[in-house]
Amino acid sequence: MNKEKLERKTHYNDSKLIIKKCHCCGTLMESTSEIRRCSSCKKSFLPANYFSKVHAKNSQEFDNLFATSDELQDNDVIIGLTVLW
View 1 (tube, rainbow, N blue to C red):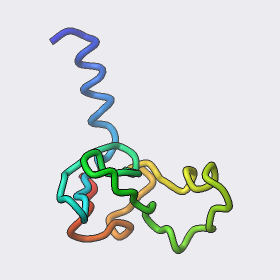
View 2 (tube, one colour; view 1 turned 135 degrees about the horizontal axis):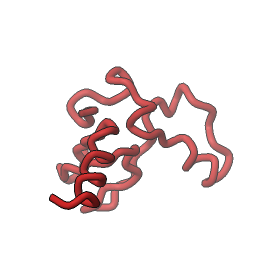
View 3 (cartoon, one colour; view 1 turned 120 degrees about the horizontal axis):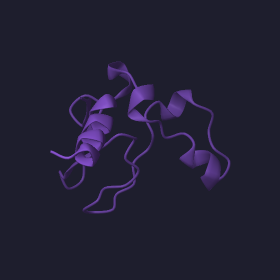
View 4 (tube, rainbow, N blue to C red; view 1 turned 90 degrees about the vertical axis):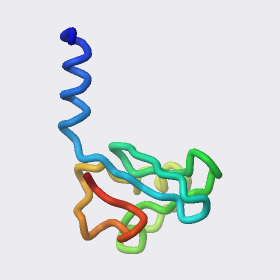
């Protein structure tokens, strides 16, 4: 394995992974930040802890509500639809 591939693989493993199942079509997705939209049916998702955060007044503020995987804890996700790995 060359050095570039090893560095990318190591960097990817440093962060928690968010695995989310779409509640409409059942598609499984994974990312290191909160998933905003289903890759298959395009259903929009709300950010974790949406109701405990300040409600956004515009689309820019709404985008800032989505967290990275390192900012989330196990109790922040919806059991059965999202997991931190």
